[in-house]
Image (cartoon, rainbow over all chains, first blue to last red; front, side):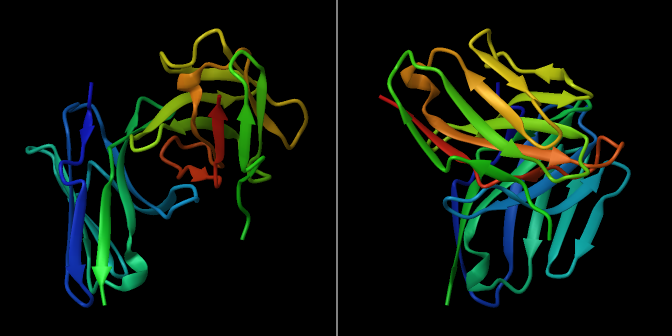
Length: 111
Length: 115
């Protein structure tokens, strides 16, 4: 039962260009979403979040867009840097206590 | 910057043995969580803990699993009789505020290998 899906397992982008990572969800009750970044041998690190009352949230190079009607969110990284190379997970807050994670997208930023 | 810590970083055990994974959440945090990630798969919720009791648990968190906050700083996950399929990275997380939308901060994980 994949309530949160990231259909692209990997993405390669040139340094300086835009990285766009996508996430789809199936449960219309989800109302809070997050993006986490994960390096090998480390825990997920929080990047940015968005509430369903918004359609966009921006923090520096990172912007998250939410399209509630399409049950879709995306993370834009501009400009992409080699240090951004990591696995990116989107997550939805389910109920009050838990995150439902997607399967992750491995981003590789090429110098 | 305060962080969640976990010990050990890697635990190897024989099938059927008990293991205890330890976490020290961020000191003023109130909500605590365990997640796991089987190699190559997604991060999965196991259990959440607040006010000294389990708030929510997943279907993975069966009778073989238990959690405890034995003192004011540690938060532990015990697996009573490990199975091969328990091999995974186990992540502890904590969140501080009283809003459920407060961000969960994750520890670096413990890699559990069951032989």
